[in-house]
Length: 96
Image 1 (cartoon, one colour):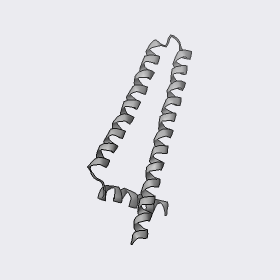
Image 2 (cartoon, helix red, strand yellow; image 1 turned 180 degrees about the vertical axis):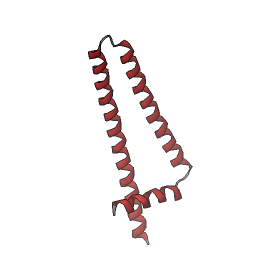
Image 3 (tube, helix red, strand yellow; image 1 turned 135 degrees about the vertical axis):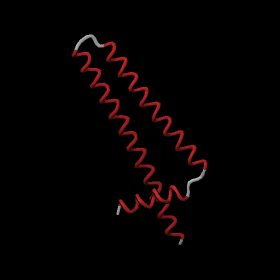
């Protein structure tokens, strides 16, 4: 059932999208790419500054935490988008 609703939400997003939604989504994607690039640059700087194996381990742990937080934020954002699309589909169904 959830897969069906998700599929319908995706199809409807393509069918009913307009230029404003496209620009919003594009902006959101570019912001996420900037965040990921920034995290990678921080990791590179940390690794470059590492003077020992222990320092490298600390860099790696910091990177894992940062990437995990970014992943969780993305998941929460996607869940919100899916909930919005499901509500929109339900509203459309009720109008018919």
